[in-house]
Length: 431
Ligand SMILES: [Zn+2]
Image 1 (tube, rainbow, N blue to C red):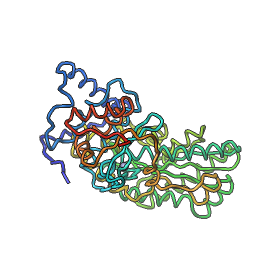
Image 2: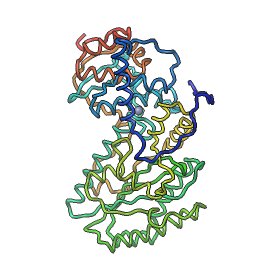
Image 3: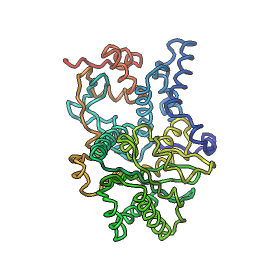
Image 4: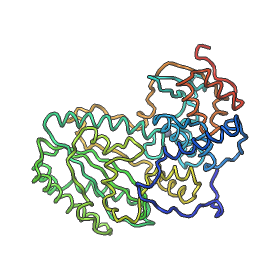
């Protein structure tokens, strides 16, 4: 597997962590680059899209190159897809997880190894490709899985709310320092939450408040104090929980959490932000709280960073770290990414407490892999043979660009784009 050299000339100085507000979003960055490329295209017509590519192009070269395919006026959906595919293409080279290296690149082998482009409700996709189903490490599978989970959780929360009940949102954080490894911190968090919802004192609070169960999600950011794993929890309680009830729950959870964290040798959690409790105001908020649907940023994420409000540093989501690596080639960012994808592998991202799915009439749970591999169907537009597909995946950004062409100009548009790269045409579906 190609490995980025730790060549000091190439490694840009360690990130000066900017405040979250100052950081450009991955989408803004892609748009800005595509604007720059569009203006250079005017200066030298025909140059972009046909230029020679260095064989071993580095990701930070790829980043700008991929933006050549992005129409500066493209809508948000297109820009997001473009960014996600470009991030995944970096992982085709750099990920340590084989499933991720294969995701959206290696064919399943069905239909003779052909890749079929289909359009469903105006949105194009490829079928016949492997999908990794990694909610943690795949920029393309993550939003599919989280959209599904957020929708399912929002619907369940809405039913619970309409029946006159309460959903509470609780965030668990703890103090950590730069240099602490992520893997043991994730175990600490999961074990700690299990400790909070077990034992006699918990059962007393649970029964007093009519709590029927919880949905817990684990996520992490990285900032000036290193890895920041935290848990977002939705608590489902019967009836309308009054302020006294919330105070009782807060007092219990803060006490139990602090005891657990200090008992494991870590510093005392923040008195208030260590366990942050609020009432959920909308079903959509509930879904987004535990299953982020917009590049890992949401109000919930801001709440989770309550213990870092000292203004000394901002923090990045793992996909922001990956995107920074895509643009800069910073080897430290790649190291962080490798630590993240390895440490999270095998961990469950979202966990429903036992019996809660039945209580909320949520139906059977699909695995992450099942959600990611779900075939959405649609009308076939083009058939791409296996050898042609291999050529396509060798050109960074071409896969997402072909989907955009399929949506606007169909097979003819796809083949015009392929011809610009000297690649054989895709075939009509009724060959
Ligand atoms: Zn994937």
